[in-house]
Amino acid sequence: MVRHGVDFLRKAFRDPETGGYAWQIDWHEGRATVLDDTRHCYGMAFVMLAYAHAIKSGIDEARPWLAETFDLAEKVYWEPAVGLYADEATPDWQLSRYRGQNANMHACEAMIAAYSATREARYIVRAERLAQSITVRQAGLANDMIWEHYHQDWSVDWDYNRDDKSNIFRPWGYQPGHLTEWAKLLLQLDAHKPADWHVPRAEALFTAGVSRAWDAAHGGLYYGFAPDDSICDADKYHWVQAESFAAAALLAIRTGKADYWSWYERIWAYCWQHFVDHEQGAWFRILDATNLNHTREKSPAGKVDYHDIGACFDVLRALGGIEGE
Image 1 (cartoon, one colour):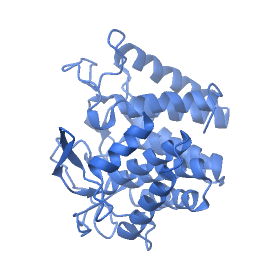
Image 2: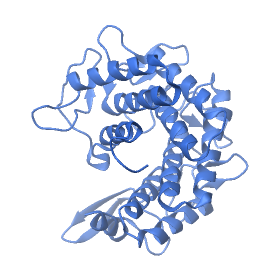
Image 3: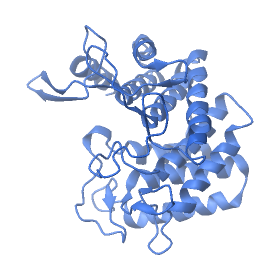
Image 4: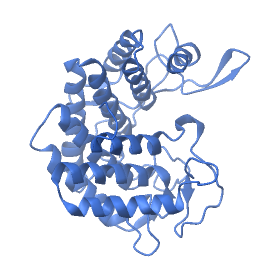
């Protein structure tokens, strides 16, 4: 099944002439029609993540595929002066002016997985550079938290999508789910490449997110808050809760502090009550501020339960309940 997945990735999404991957396709009767040929670094990060897990599954042919994708990302997206990847390009690799942290966060995740699968030092070195660049330097430009959007020179763009809530991949405001997700990644990075700044930074980011976004009245973490700490998007998204309980568990195990177990239990109990579909399986996608479910929609096809299942596996691995890294 894994081999089928990565083979399809290469057959349907990859452009053999440029090595780039289409953002969106229509697949019909064995043929791909490209609907959006934008080359997103965010998408390429998930391609690398897929190849890394394929290698872990015993699919050795994925090893050069991972290497070629990493090399291509380094060639077309990497900006060495800032230690970060650019965000998107045309099919002939003309970069847009937009810069964002989200692609770099998932690239860091992919690099950790790539190192775990191959033990090649370049992957963990890149993960460390990405983590430091976003969670320390860029955070220093944005109230010691992680802002999502930047200008071409990596200065903070405080107004990007301020009045547009429709772009769920590039929302305005601080994302508590990304603050906690970075906390989790810093701890996973530290397990491979320890540094004295990883754990304190993870604690600070986790606390910054949950202290501002937890809904004391109805439970759950809001989707976004503004620079003045007011809630700018009061919906509750499944992935925010998932990444946050995983980060809480990893922090509890790493630090021995009981307060993180309290956060884990609080968030997990909320998810079990409101997000898990106990009849049909999987998790609902979005609830409103009072936890009402207006659509019963599940995770979109592009990332089916990626955060939810991944977070559960992260906790199980950290507790020693399953093997692997």
